[in-house]
Length: 170
Image 1 (cartoon, rainbow, N blue to C red):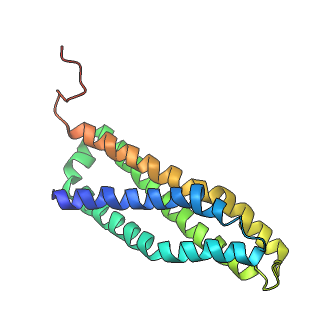
Image 2 (cartoon, one colour; image 1 turned 180 degrees about the vertical axis):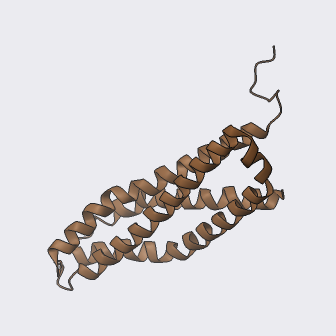
């Protein structure tokens, strides 16, 4: 397997993880600082609109490189039970991360559409529902993509030889 395909797979997951974690830790809390609802939505929306294309490309490349890696390792995935189980878990977590990312996008759009020009929500019920969903979705994506990174490390360990740098010398 090409080092560039593996590197693409890891770097794109790192971008997906890091971007979503920054959103939860940095951008979304900073967006609560402006005085009006409209300004808060604009700050957050602008940040996510700028990051969205980068994240979209990262997700697409992550999925494509993951397919290439799985195809290249198909015999090991099919015949080595720990690899089969880890690959299945990684696939399920990746699917959940795609779903949480898409849901966050949808609810972010709903929140933006519900924001009124006068600083108060046009539709408070829709705004509150979207805000409530986004409160937990903002943490779901970094948790899921972080778990995928951990499983990538575990899969790498399965391919490693018996003696590694951190193994005990005896």
